[in-house]
Image 1 (cartoon, one colour):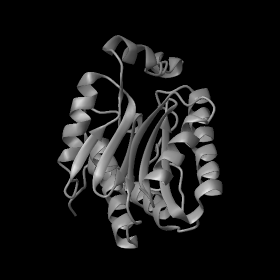
Image 2: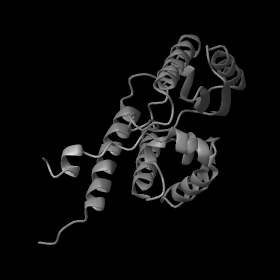
Image 3: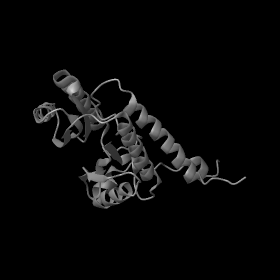
Length: 223
């Protein structure tokens, strides 16, 4: 029986988990507005380059935006608010330019928001099949990052809207370029938009988790 390389097994497992989580969030249909959960998200929190406090703050920002937009616009908007390091990416659709401006005012009024990237479109909401396609693209891009040897996959947040892939994260210029190249190579991706916060290689080294201490027992032969 032919053995399967461990790396391939890890990639297939990661892709399966990513697709399940992404498709589940995207197709639940529980609300007309989803905050950062439809086709984006971070897989592993442990190696996220944001502090734990900032991660919680980003989650709070997304929740507040979701609630306030739902209260004011109801089913007239399908807005995905993805917050990373207090910068909010807005994707999705609104019914009119007035509604788009209303969403921007709402986000700018949320506590601790440091910036807004507006990618909202004035148009009707996409079909279920289109949202499914976006969710699948997100999962495939994340899996491609997992498969890349020179990228930290869970340091990059991926959101997809109408075939356009948005990338967020604290990354070096080298990582940003590489991530964009990997994402563009995924079949079905129409465009890649980088919404990264660029850090230096020295900053990256400071953000890396400490290396695990060697097992003293193993080092001494267990004596």
